[in-house]
Image (tube, rainbow, N blue to C red; front, top):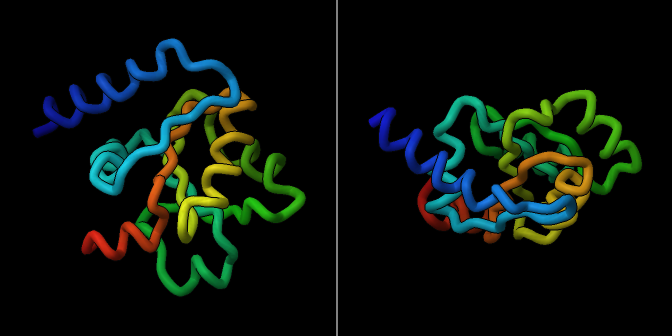
Length: 123
């Protein structure tokens, strides 16, 4: 199982071998669930504290992307050498966060369907 997860992770990582700053990969719920199995992947919820408090993906940290301090807080909590899996409610805010983070040099996977899609898929 670990070999399968590692090979999936490496193959997804190879998609970014030519990644330029400002680019990120939007993924489906299924891809996202596979990516976050890896303990080295940082899980980032960019919704409000209230939304996060209601429910979130286990192991996620919460930084509100609409807060003016988002870039500084992200840099203080995230590690650039580890991938970031980012999500919001529907996918709009996470795309904004993914763009900001990828411009700063992070390798970013964005949950295209958001937390609503995650719940709808039974997670």
